[in-house]
Amino acid sequence: MKRTRAVSLTALAAAAALVLAACGSSSDTSSSSSATSASSANAGGTETAESGSGGSGAEGGTITYAQEQEWYSYNNGTSAANATANSVVLNQVQRGFSYVDNKGVLTRDTDFGTFEKTSDSPLTVKYTFNDKAVWSDGTPIDCADFLLGWASGSGYYNADGTTNASGPPPAGAKDLFDTAGTTGLDQTEKPTCADGDKSVTLVYKTPFVDWQAAIATSAGAPLVPAHVAATQAGTDSAGLIKAIETDDAATLTKVADFWNTGWVLDKAKGLPDASLIPSSGPFIISAWDPGQSVTLKKNDKWWGAPAKADTVVIRFISQNQQVSALSSGEVDVIEPQPNPDTNSALAALGDSVKADLGSQFSYEHMDLNVKTAFANEKLREALFKCAPRQQIVDNLIVPSNPNAQLLNSLMLMDFQPNYDKIAADSGFANYAEPDIEGAKAAFAASGEAQGKTIRVIHIDPNPRRTNEVALLKANCDPVGFNIQDTPLSSDKFGPQRDAGDYDIALFAWFGSGLLGSLAPQYLSTGPSNTSGWNDPQIDEALNSLNTLTDPDAALPLLTTVDQRLAANYYSFPIFTFPGVVAMKSNITGPVLNTTQTQATWNMQDWARTG
Image (cartoon, rainbow, N blue to C red; front, side, top):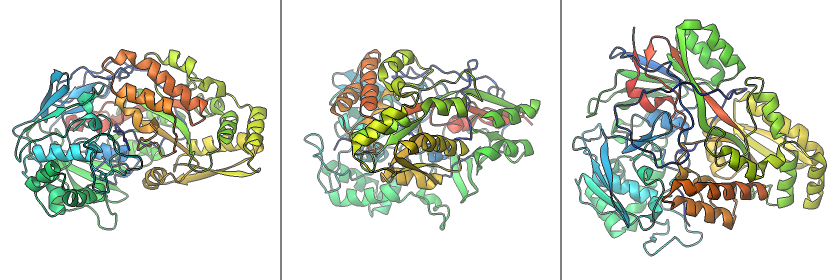
């Protein structure tokens, strides 16, 4: 079973109503690492405002940041933990060879190490860890960490003890490691290195368009400490390396068991022992108060430029309470979704705060589950035809932003190049307004009895999404459906969606614009395709997309995927998300990140001026 590497595309909770903010002026703020050209044809199109960036700031002290969803795993490489809620905590705890900056540009993290393409045929990439790179417990970051990253992310090992050395996994095979995806790494040969080696070479069987973000990157799953997983499996780093070299199923099963679940947090037990959650970045996780906050402190073993703040406290605060918390001084930095109330409340604070606004790689959509209520294509057609997509935008988004528009692509955001072309060809525009008579005819043709119950899951509390479901119900119940609003807490939504326990999932994918990030959601065997969609033309287009050497050739493939998603009535887009980062006027460093890493992408640069 081919699986695809997700690039931390996550279910995102949002506020009551949203505004698609205009792009601001360019910001030059970045981390201490050097930038490189991104391999993504989709990156860019958005720049952030300068407010909040620049200024040296004072060293030391504590900065408090508001985040709406609670942290729940130290390993966000698993399918269940691949979430923004975790990445905002881990961005500067687990560093890697690259990350996506605030403008969606893939950036090399030279503090962590370097990588270089040494051959085009076959595509060969040499990775070299910084000689000084160590986990916060003093253990060197080296060969074992890289090999565990490859083993867990390549789909090479099957749960039944077999491997895929001779080709793709057999149909129905289950991965030994419950990875969020394998795109890119599943196209590589098994790497080899010795215990303690600081360099590893990765050879591709076929080209991969996003090879610069294939492994050890905060644009996807960063490396986790191999020595911890090895110890928990009853071996050591050398034993883990040998197990990967020899395909030792017994040892690797123990390693995978811990990798899959051993880093999932337990609120009753509190923060795991420090030996289990070491850092490879400028901050360490020092405290966790479940339901309240997680505290990060400066890592004295970090070999790069030190963090400016001694401590960053991430407070778990709902969207509708964040401006109040900023105003009262409870927090210094917030990242709510813009809406009329948020915008006016921030404006009322005047010069005491500053804000950075812009568009993000995030889009609201509804996925129809063909494994549950929507196995019947005519029933999916009926839902498409009664769904009030334009009405949702007009009623819930336009009051905040008169220029807001209906999104008609699942592949490109409306601020990206080529959006107008793909939106015109996708077919989604045919379902902008409800066609109630057409929906009734499709429902009748489905053979389903009137009152068909449809569960719509979404993250709660979220008044806007509650209103979206209410509009869907008002339009679709007269057709024959019985739409049931099924709100879930953020820590319940991911696992329930991952299990496929829904009829419609209403949420937003939050990504990076990398081409390789699309397959996990829409490939028939993609780990994030929990709805059971299966279309050979979609698979062919996405598999071709992943092996492109010329990103300019992506548009026809992306168009095919959009067209098939619309023609099969699988999923429909609604709108793209705006974003805002607001902070007290004496805070420097935070800037809006258009991608899934959010404001903490450069947390090591945050400082207080007084």
